[in-house]
Image 1: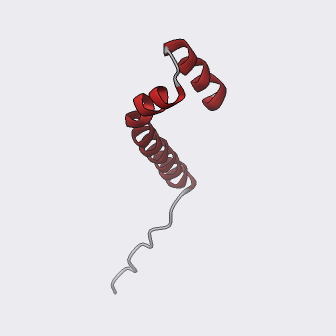
Image 2 (image 1 turned 135 degrees about the vertical axis):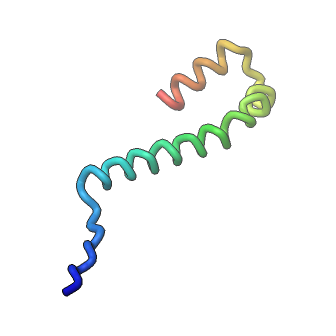
Length: 61
């Protein structure tokens, strides 16, 4: 008789690894979307480097 084929059941370790990968993917996409806009925000708000740094610390904490 043929043995039944194994059913691929995600383990807790697999789910944790995938959720971590997805979290880093989302964070990377958001950062890559925000980074090109920094000079535009800096110019429109009239901030110098220190003001932009303070804005970033307050906003993104």
